[in-house]
Image (cartoon, rainbow, N blue to C red):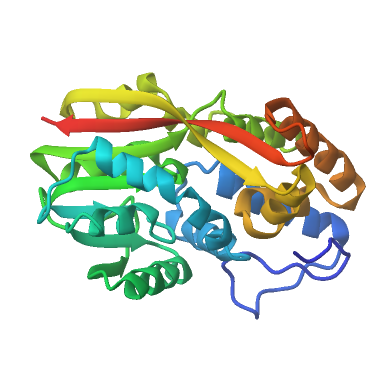
Amino acid sequence: MKPWCSCTVPVLGASPTSTPLTTPEQSKALTRRAFMETVFPQPVADLAALKLKQQAAWSAGDYAVIGTTLQIVGETLCEALDLRAGERVLDVAAGNGNATLAAARRWCDVVSTDYVGALLERGKARASAEGLAVQFEEADAENLPYADASFDVVLSTFGVMFTPNQQRAASELARVCKSGGSIGLANWTPPGFIGELFKLIGRYIPPPTGVKSPSLWGTEERLRELFGERIATLKTERKNFVFRYRAPQHWLDTFRTYYGPVQKAFLAVGAAREEALAADLIRLVQQFNHATDGAMVVPSEYLEVVIRKR
């Protein structure tokens, strides 16, 4: 991660010929706005421009360094869905392919999608290393390029929850899923470690009024609002993913370098508040940390979701 400085900051998603910003204040304002559009996005008229900024943010660093540690979530979700060999499965906002690989290992016919091409390449390399046949395609979760009722199962682990237009994304998941098929999700919950992480960052950079937090996807109430009458049955289970790092500082260094929301938060607050943000993040880790030997063992609650579509 580059340190904050008074040099020109490029617009996320813009071309290198964009007009440069000449003051630290302008640069800070721009980075702050880019952060808010990544973590607390909202539907706007120019969604194409917003998505370009989000793509640039999630392409920063190498999210797969963190993403691959979450593999167990994809495996347990596929077990909860009781996948059958030969089923046609779509993984939406698949990232580096955790749920994709889990479904492919169960001999499903898998299509893996994301709008960040670099992450799809990481998933493709992982599938190739295991000899798994998976179709990888760039696609927007809010505008999936598939016909109605194309898939037996639709998946998303810690992915679709970050879409700008939550209702549109939910409608797309339901649209491409067959009647009687399943939608499987894994979403961070508001009271869990990652949910609290977003709240903490929000205290430094408050989200715009009316913007819905991604972690609301981790509540049954919001899921019923989003999917409505398309739900035949809804089964949810609160689970924990355990973040394991050498020490709290090791976790912070890793997330600050590779995890888009944290990386952009540090850029947004600027040099004057970096130390305070870092200290608060370490304190948050300490509140959740089960380790007593200097290591970090932090459970983060998420909601495992299985929807049977009407």
